[in-house]
Length: 146
Image (cartoon, rainbow, N blue to C red):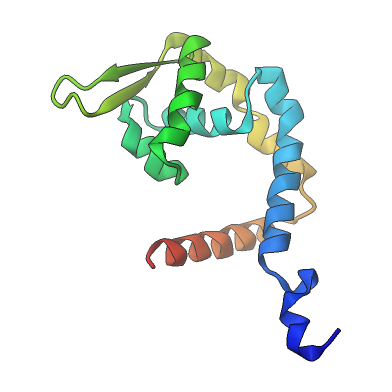
């Protein structure tokens, strides 16, 4: 390949190994989440709520770095399944408050082993995983500030 186009090689793109690694990790989650009858995005939403229940939609959107129009159908499905409730804030009707139901809280106990099971499937030593985590969050933080 002409040197001028070297930067167009797939192997020279940072985005490709990030995309592929992300896709492969999410694939590893699927059997565990299937047992919980959850999709990966639903699992992410529930993790936010398990960390801090009763939050505004904007908090979930910010934490997951998703738009509210992307989250709304996810939240509706989780509500239909009985895992959470969505209500307008009494102090400001523009805000939607999301809270876990008892069923959503119980699901947390069932999901407790998912992170451990996933880490056992990753071909990284604990220190490598910590370093990757640090680098990725550094990158995310800097890209969000631009």
